[in-house]
Length: 163
Image 1 (spheres, helix red, strand yellow):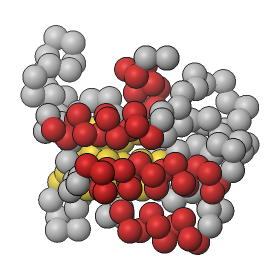
Image 2 (spheres, rainbow, N blue to C red; image 1 turned 30 degrees about the vertical axis):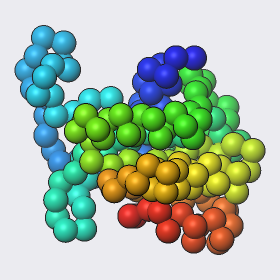
Image 3 (tube, rainbow, N blue to C red; image 1 turned 90 degrees about the horizontal axis):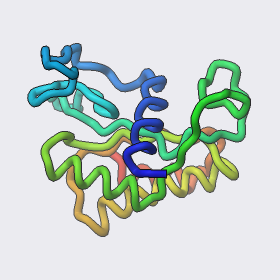
């Protein structure tokens, strides 16, 4: 599957995570809705940093595959949605690419649960670790914790994430 297709699927799936506050901006009037100066787009959300600044984040899921059957979740195992999964390297590449072009100021990463909670949390933490340690990424990183992941993995996530 092409990276662009994965981005479309996993950015769209991330919109259901209601914890990312919007700045309330609207799209500018352009013929296709995504012209130069557009303030919103696929996978971009606006949130507020602890110092009050409004920042743009790449908001995506690592995957929308999920083992669980949570009735409220669009990505539950039985849901008839198109599925996709990023590799750690793909998320890192996208984040750095968007950041270097000044499209975003950080990353908001969540995920469906694959294999088990610890495996999924390890993958999420690895994205943040690679960004911070291998690429010296200084942008904002928001990691969603995976339910039932080990305390050790949650502590490790805290080493790399801003929230």
